[in-house]
Image 1: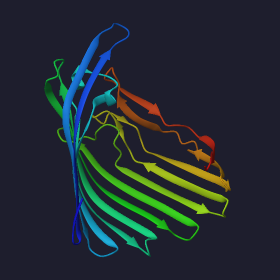
Image 2 (image 1 turned 90 degrees about the vertical axis):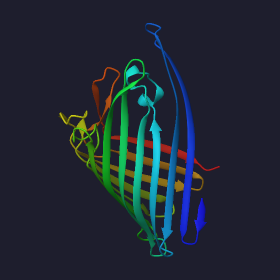
Image 3 (image 1 turned 180 degrees about the horizontal axis):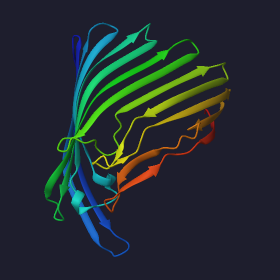
Image 4 (image 1 turned 120 degrees about the vertical axis):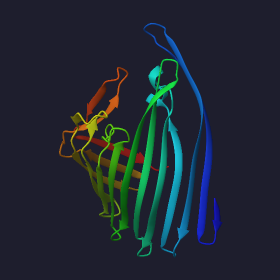
Amino acid sequence: MVTLGDWSFTGNVRQDHMDLDQTKIVNGQTASNSDDKTSYRFGAVYRINDNVSTYATLAKSWQLPYGGIFINPKLSEFYSTKLKEVGAKAYLLDDALMLNASIFQIDQEQPQTNNSGFITSKIEARHKGLELEMRGQITKQLSATASYTYLDAKDRKTGKKPNDVSDQLVSLGTTYQFSDAWRFGGSVKYVGDRYAGNNEAVDLGDYTTVNAMASYQTGKHKVQFNLYNLFDEKYYLGSTDGATGINSIGYGAPAEFMVSYSYEL
């Protein structure tokens, strides 16, 4: 990190080496995969005044297909992701309110390989979007967060939406410190329309979930009660390419609760 007047610059470069060996229990068939990749991330921040700054980010990262738990000869090459982002951030009302706005472009590339590991084609997707975020301490007891993301995602060859990518994401949350002992909170999340697969043949629809929380603390003891998907919204969690090459669609978690206890040492 380097600071020059009102400018700040950050950067990092990382080299990864991967060796993966797989043996199938059923038939004893073996497979292996190895590769070397370089990732980077560079950023610049310009401080307009004590409360407002603008920033830009340029980055590239890599992802191993199937998270490295399965070797498919036709998907043996790393996926790559390139990010370009510019935005502005402001801290107002004595830092009680944070506002952030950014526009970004994400290019994803998924090479397809043959049984010998040579690249035969590529699936290329571009995500262009807008992100708005707010975090604030409304009163001494009440805090709130809100975020909105708009995504225009398309396969660069077909013009269709990539697998399981929503066009809009909305998140709202709040917590209220009722007393020294009691604390309450809630959140709402909206996920827009998505499709299973890359040909827009199966519509996964949109969904909204609501969560709630209450906690009680006395001394070093704390008990917390969480309710997830309070209204038991029925929705599809997403779609992933299975080992068979067929998209597997899963259901989202139903209404559930959790009680936890913690003790401060």
